[in-house]
Length: 134
Image: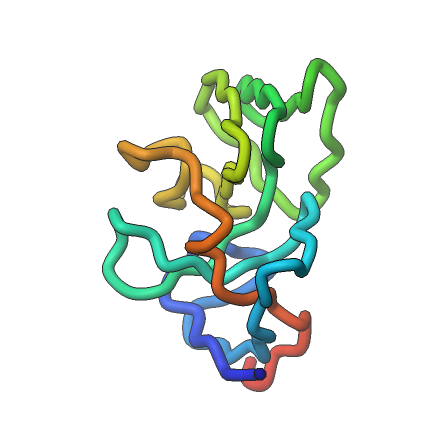
């Protein structure tokens, strides 16, 4: 199933801008989720659905030091992300994901949520990459 998702904030800039409509595909249970995917999430701490990027996969250790992200000690190249002042460590539990916005210092995401990890069942769709409005 496909639907349109409206970008509601600047947390994904420069990849996506507020007001854009993006084609989104429903994720069935066996569909794999990969690092870098742009996903739609129904998160308990956020009103409505939000768009975020998958950065941490189940079982990984994610270290964030300003603009640098490391996955199990290996630097992650993120050409899409803005630099940030944030520093922190995350240990992603089994069956969960760590999601971040691309506009790091302007994003409410796993770094600021009380429950930083998102269960697989809360990830309802993946963006197709096709924007329908500018």
